[in-house]
Length: 480
Image (cartoon, rainbow, N blue to C red):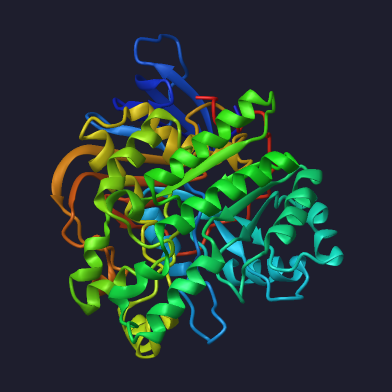
């Protein structure tokens, strides 16, 4: 016996939530890893050092949010809610891994931006994290850095068709980026809104004095997103570039993605075409923009909230596998910050909403508890699929021997009204008072308990940077 070995802990009596269903099994972990999953009726298994009772609760793999913006700096000196506060919200909400974005300024080497983001996260982030890299400069020098970053464990990049004059890549520049990403064996994430169309719509609003926050959605016409989704998907097929269309907000956008997949299949191609849904586009709607100045400010995000008629087809699309993962685009600015910026008009207000602490519970409430989605599909879209797609499927997102002991004990029964987590700005939250069913009780990150009975018990930041490696075959949207 090795007296220096870490103790073995057993989670006993609960239902293990897996992509195959809810299993009556016990889970043992030791140190940082899961060591066995044992059906309840098994005999002759080693006795653990400690047993924790999970009766009447579900044991989940730690959730993975593939789209966040923690502590994101803006050019005017503002920052979204920081790494420490946002990662605490993540853990309390059952999310143990996030993937954020390193955003270089124009002309800045991509590795320099990555180092800046890692420095910001170091000694502040409580959960594990990876990084995507935004590309705004498609010069030969910048594109040559892409393979270097892939080799360093950063295999996902982002390009914008939106934000003319700031982040937008014209069609030919996006095509260059796709070609470079494809050649490097990486994947491109695209914010699909037509920057020209949005700029024209915004100009009309500003010229006619309609600059209050209620007018924000009119600066992002639905046709703009639908058109850009179709164009990005067509370009991905041309270049054979693996593509993830992020934060789709419209049923029509999902239709355009499905159209592109049909064309791909008819052409005998295998280009990866993925779609992401975010929590706010699933649960909140454009009526908030007419609910008063403060409510409209809180809801400024891009793409904006859309009509409630999109919720059902998007939710069903996620349940059926037509959309591949549920993320948050968590980028929280408090209402005071948004209010100060609003003096210049809606176009001056920093975009973003909270969600990293709400995603697990509220998606269970509105998808699983209402029978729209099975528990096994839910675990796929909040944990297994984002880990697999983003190159972490070898260690995150599953309850299996050898995987990180990122574990959540979840009680699916309590019903209540959601109250924002202490780290969030209550006044600026979209989620205050929304019906909720289920509670995160206990959380472990790589075998260390970080949340107990709904309270943070590990104050010291223990999150680590996660190098990733894509397996594009296992990321296929048809693999369920």
